[in-house]
Image (cartoon, rainbow, N blue to C red; front, side):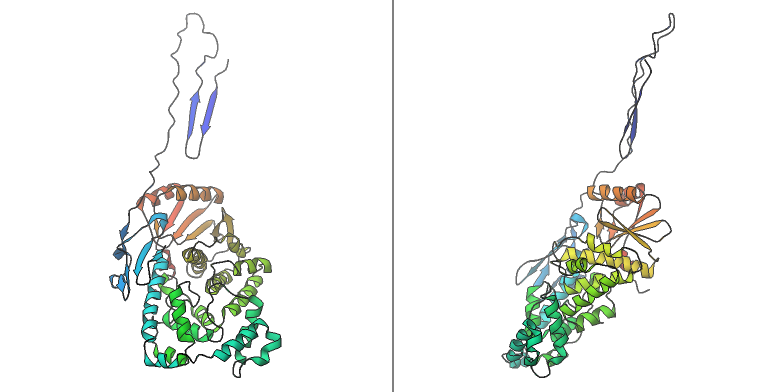
Length: 428
């Protein structure tokens, strides 16, 4: 009987076992060798998964922002899930922020609420209450429901909003909208001055924005406010991603319906079908601002074949943090293309966009804030590395990575690039 070799293979190791039966009957007088013992498999060392402890919130946020009028940030932040989670104790009730990006947005919103509350106590505001264009609101409501038949009913001086009315009829209600279209332009200007998204899910802020915008003295009230952050609309910039002037201008000057019509047109110019574009633009949780930011980023990458496939792998809504995460991923790719290396191709592996520069280098962009060694990263990046094949593979994250995570990923052929937002949007 012949000797047999049995191979046992797995992802990280291969073991060889030898069947010890003799080849044939021993020759008389010959020495019979001792039985060959099977060799123990050689298993490379794999670091145990990490379980990070909470960190002081003061290590992530400026100390002067840890408390303010009516709020106090919890003392610690939990990095579980590779995004920091915070709790804010507010007079109106607890507020959670499931990422450092969203925490910075919330802090800007809290300051905006404080300023609007102070504004609502001023005599100018109080004098303007109760005189808020009731007739205009009523007529505008009729125009939106049936613009072709009732445009003549629109009050004198309101015809410049005819485009907004017709866009509203074509698109319908857009996620995140609240308040009347009659004072929506003023509301958007007010939000821009305060550095917040006019379509925020922060309901106390939405209520205050609407109250000031519909006040009879709204023009004077908006003029009385100084810009909260230099540059206007910079509340989003505090999330680490600098939104360009074009973005701020269109969000301030166009209604949500108009934005979505523009976004649909731009996506179709990139080769996107109307059905796919409409599905994206009507996805619950994605506001007109989110859709505009994503569409602008895709337009920057519009030369890449199949780039609108990104819309197929956007995660479903799981809170505003998930939408901001998805938006930032696409924006990181666009900014890398503009400031680091031109990107020329994209492929989708396990619902992940993998970008290539045409020279054998591949990039994954993910705004993870604290990358530690865990099962999700182990399996996910190992699979990506295997599917990508030859060439380098870099993982760009927004924050930091533990030494263990860097070492283990490097051993699997994945290089981690930290502080991605600061590096990509650096003004140096």
